[in-house]
Image (cartoon, rainbow, N blue to C red; front, side, top):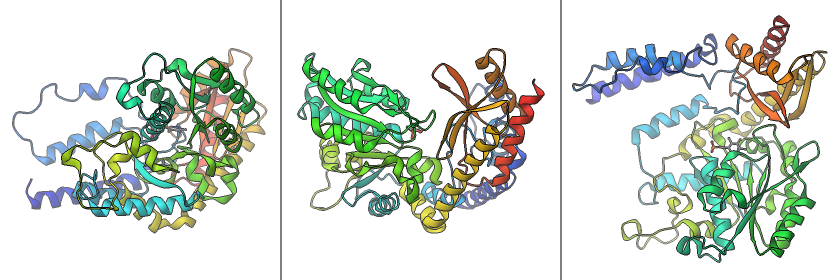
Length: 468
Ligand SMILES: *Cc1c(COP(=O)(O)O)cnc(C)c1O
């Protein structure tokens, strides 16, 4: 592609992006498609001869776009958001154009130094003490894997990487049953093994770990010859927003010398608002914390902020320095690839820098406070309808509900959810609370308005009553 054509198609892509965002409300949030429909429209063989951009672009519009779920739709209330504020998209255009590989300081000095600065901005914004240093990971799953590997290495006196996990060393990690599946995977991949992930029951309205049970489990394990290594606590669990009592978990961990990793992948963004920090009170005592600016905050996927009280433990666990990666004579530099499992790294700090500067913390706080208020208002309105029940009260902007029925409640609510999503105006997902299938609602899309929450109420109530 010559530079004239590159210019033309880049401009076209930017135009297309702006039009897409401007008209996104006219699309159903989730496409009505059968599995295989998109695949069937793509030729089975690769083209031998290059094709004109006009045709490629037309196929993109015709075959791909109608098959997309629109995550930037203001009435996307499913899962958690993956917000890409327009300003962060602009930053990503620039990053794509430069396409630097930011594994070492010398492979992209500005990317490294900006990463240090903006992560320190974020640290201040969420109220973590100065003793924490941050790094951007591709995902919370990677951050949690790194944290679990550190737990393992500490518990094995830093010999696990070399010796593996010989039969005798039974490393134990503790978490509630409300943590994300990325914790299970980290336990599998680290070689610790699922049988050594000890599930602690939860108590109370926030569904946090029973800390007395946690301490009892650690004691039993010590007596049985296991090696307790660490605890993965959560603030804002994925299913219903469960929050562990971080201060109490940290106090137990201190007594037994265990590492504490806090997974706040979604809820961490809300900590830019002082009034929500009670949900993770005591977090300054944790060893590491992860939150995803690519979820609620608005930094285009992928961008996961991983904060560490002692980055040396992480570097000791993950750094490999073959000769070709050494940066001789450059003391005082950071090579962030030594802080993460993958070697290669994209330039992710630029979109955070653009985002925070353009909106300011006050703009981002207002967005989050609005989402929380609108979600709570929706929960109140549904609670006031006699045929609806709020099953888990809002934690920030997440709650779950179900529609009452005389029949099989799970079947009824699954059918209701399908009907709501087929309508296309809003998109919700389900979860389980005990044995119950419940419908989950979270507000968090960057450009959502209060009217969108009202539409959600109308669609939910109308659809339920139509089906009666
Ligand atoms: C989304 C989420 C994750 C996984 O995040 P990725 O960045 O997709 O790996 C982990 N934990 C919680 C609580 C989450 O909400």
